[in-house]
Length: 174
Image (cartoon, rainbow, N blue to C red; front, side):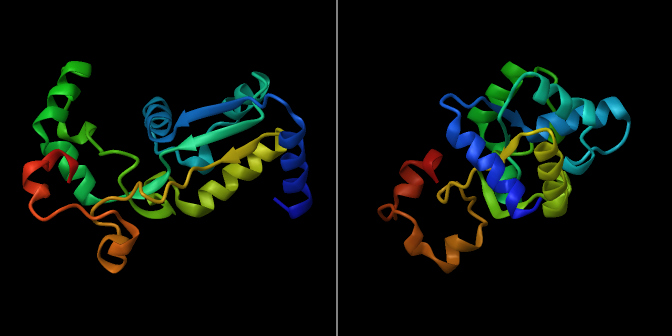
């Protein structure tokens, strides 16, 4: 999308006193669409009918939640923490390890996940939304990082450090 079109959407959002934002759990949506289609659906290949539906509801913007690259550490924690496993089984009794992908907020890298089609797929979706008069919203929360994010070792000063031994006493926090 060119800068002129982008400014048009920004102006529209600024002029709207009550913009309507639609939050999409991106991984859930793409998994459901892939299962229905019998093939992998990415951000770039979301059916136009879905985008048309969002537009028809009158949404000004779509928030694609959980698009960032997650890592192995967050997934492993999600698959081994007994409290989390109990919650998964309560919510989804036939839950398997393949169902547990980890938190979308355990970000390893602030790049669009290759599993979702990567950055190019996101750019394609952004253009398609713009054609329907909708903006794209992505969140960046700098402390939503996983333990295997590069900042953890390269920039520990980015984080509030705990006291020595706290990782044992309060293991659910670490």
